[in-house]
Length: 44
Length: 485
Ligand SMILES: Cc1cc2nc3c(=O)[nH]c(=O)nc-3n(C[C@H](O)[C@H](O)[C@H](O)COP(=O)(O)OP(=O)(O)OC[C@H]3O[C@@H](n4cnc5c(N)ncnc54)[C@H](O)[C@@H]3O)c2cc1C
Image (cartoon, rainbow over the protein chains, first blue to last red):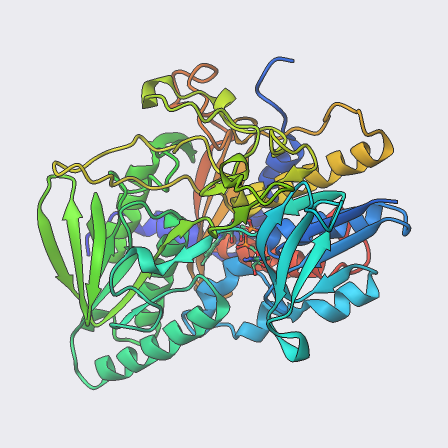
């Protein structure tokens, strides 16, 4: 195992309070991508 | 009055059937033909495969739901397609065979006005010699039964580790052209975390084996992601995670044979190698179901409907990687020969791969096939349903609902470990799924910001929240349709 994630980063990744806000952020971000819609790529 | 037949009740088939039923007046018939009696939320199979969920947590029986919602359900499998009917039957139909009960083996001509083929992939274990779920110590998590068997075997290996045995675990793709690397990626990280939870991590050597050229390719040609305030390549992100978790990797590997505890593979360098293991989970290649199609005189017209998977409005002209464009990808999933046949989800034949194709020095194709994950499967199913509804109202209508994978985003929340406080998830979103190198030439075909990665506990919560949300939606509970695909 090679430490590639610093102790601070790991703390932030696993801290429930920080992650709670991240959860809200991620949910909204995913929603924006879904709500961003979809469509064709060819010209009519 | 129109009759719409949906083949398959997976993510795509079930989404199509439920939207059709909600939006169409009752005089129109919606019929689902599918061999599995249960709906399964496949993404959570990963957690069954590590013993943290039971199959019952992610499945429910379809028959009672469909009865309640006035969807006709036949527990049967489609065998062959007759899009023009035949000499005895004027209407187009699908020949289906019942798979259970008194009717088992009975065949029926299921006629339709509109047909949605959402039969997903055939799990092509036969494509790799010796690869079969539960055989040769190699397992699968592609269905809930496979995942349950995988957990039974893994639990036994964990017991042996607790008694002091050192073991080798091999997880990845079991064929040179397999897809679904994402599922194997989730599984390897979950297994690694479970071994730590059982305090046996130091007894296991864990190896990732994959047909990808680089880590983090995922059959999507890799990604350039925003990661916090940095811009990172997906291979760098996955390498960081694997190194941090002590996972080794073998890349560009086309597994071609599996023996008891031994995987044989060919590398892109043309070498033939072997990797031994005590427990393996190898994703098989996905193929079409081998359906046949006939015209009204019984002539074989399979090539009008199928190219392995079902032919839709894609551009199938063979061309080199450098000439691939997003315009090659389908927009409406309509079969060009029969306007009343559609194939959303995994059932449609992609025009080509997404990852750059590579051959070994011996000429073997070792390239991931293009994935079609849950979100595009649901989105394409819904747009097919919406187009059919418009066609019913106005048969000569142009199809308005379009959704090319070259103009659609996807969110992949990869579980990296289970647990409300110790869990982790790698959340990746991409836009578009198929890179558009003309629109986004400097960012590997994708829009940064909409293509981003994030690692942490929140990813696990999100994946768990999606599990409950999508099962709620699939059960068609109140306001289910407000939950997006
Ligand atoms: C282990 C695993 C984990 C995954 N995790 C994720 C994830 O986290 N996120 C994500 O977005 N995607 C994930 N995926 C991918 C996702 O599951 C697929 O994209 C999705 O299931 C495709 O939906 P589908 O309806 O096209 O096919 P399927 O879900 O495979 O459904 C096909 C349906 O057709 C039926 N059928 C088969 N043969 C016939 C026949 N002859 N006649 C009639 N019906 C038939 C089947 O019984 C089934 O009901 C994962 C896949 C796997 C295997």
